[in-house]
Amino acid sequence: MKIKTITMYSTSLRNSQRMVHFIEDSYTNKLELKKNYHSNSTPLTLPSFSTYAKKTYLNPLEQKNEILLDTKGKSGVYCWVNLLNGKCYIGSGVILNTRLIDYFQDWYKLNRGNLPIVRAILKYGMGNFALLILDFTEIEDTLNREQYWLDELKPEYNILTQAKNSKGYKHSPESIEKMRQKALGRKHSEEVRKAMSENRKGENSPLFGKTLSEETKAKMSETALNRTKLHRPGTFVEVLDLQTNHTVIYNSQRDAVKALGTHLSTLSRREKSGITKPFRDRYVITIKR
Image 1 (tube, rainbow, N blue to C red):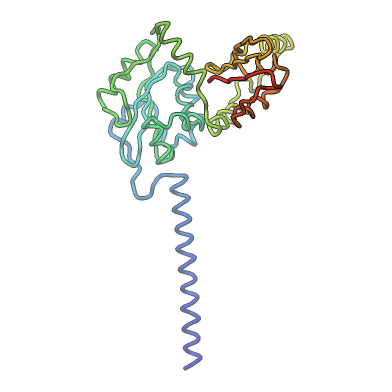
Image 2: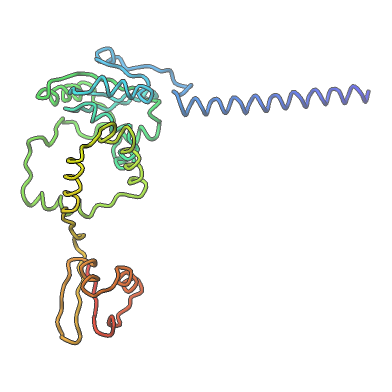
């Protein structure tokens, strides 16, 4: 009886171990499927209007090069379709391949996370989206065709219901100045800057595969050396000379340290520490941002 009991226990233990391995393997497989392909719980179905598409890409990640090649030098209207919930987004581009490549760039998705379509791609993964080219168009007809599809499909991921772009539109001088000031003060996060840098390396670099002549290199070097560097707007340094009672306002900290014969770290340390004692017992320095 004891031998039989031990044998039964050993068999039960082996069966339990097999069941654990089976569950672990199944869970791992499901994770891989969810990560790389489509959800197993939802059938891969396209909406009925997809039959009118000029091109259909069921796996945009793997078909990226094919997509960019098919749309190179063309204008048209495209549609992202979420295969899990049927929601879609309509967009257009007069240079279609340069418009579509944004969706494959990490920096674009990080920097445009406020857009519903970008949020959806980040949430569900591009593997759960299909890309349709609804129309190839002449440049002048692109917006009209985009408007047709917006009216026809009423896509859930679109914020605007009117197709439009800024081509040919002229901003007022006041608007231009406001946009310039806003752009000068804009800061990308470290994560976005890193993604932008990575997406400009290798084959994505505009100079990839090109050989520059010595003349071209010399011109690029000369342009870089003569480039005007503007100070960051809103940062000025006021320096009062206690001996002469004369005040000078510098447009940047760099100009101020150059005149004072010191270093940027000195001004930074004084500002952070709240030091008010005159620099070298002579200069009262005030940084205005």
